[in-house]
Amino acid sequence: MVRINLLPAEIRATRERGRQQVRLVVAGLLVAFVMVGLYVFLWNQTAVVRAHLEDVESEHAEVEAGIASYAPYVDLQGAVSRRAEQISDAMGASPDWMHILLAISRDIPGGVWLTDLRLSADHGEEEDGYLHMQGYTYDHPSTARWLEGMEEISYFADVRCSFTVTDLFRGLDLVRFEMSARMPGEVQDLLTVGGGG
Image (cartoon, rainbow, N blue to C red; front, top):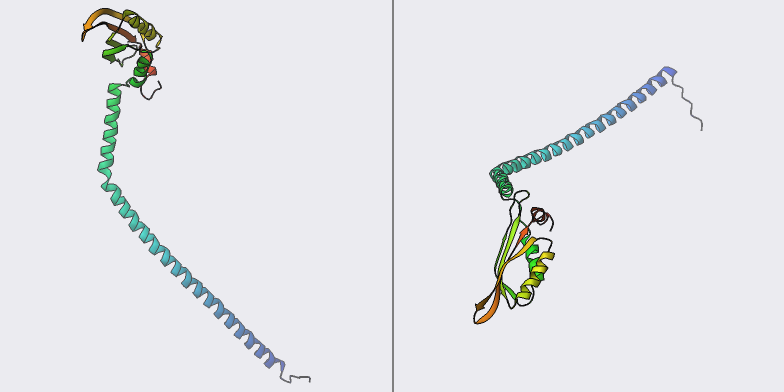
């Protein structure tokens, strides 16, 4: 069936304009509703971020207060470190005694024992340290062999035997000896603790 509209064109145009206005109002309301929803959502997110920021700032203030309470200990640690550096500078580095004593003990012949061992190290530049030993052995050749062995140890120079004498020790005739050597400054530098050796 065919529908024929007998209404005048002005009325039809007015009705069409009314429908368009209704569509525009509905579209405007929808846009306004979306904008209001978006605004509420963003306002809510901003409030959450602000609350989190306040928590972080509060936590930061607590940490800063905690750090401030440790300030005296930090100052004390700095003072201790400075004093330790001053002591280290004043005392200098000491030789690595373990390597020196191992070198001496490796070459000591059987039947020789020490009664006195003194090592000294000077910390100034080009200053020598000294080794001084006394002990007993069964015969003079043992002392001579050890003297030769000591000359081979690179830590020492000018190894000398001060004396060897036959002496009565606990009812035995033994040879008492005294030896000395120089420990050159450059060797001390190589043997300083923490600097090699």
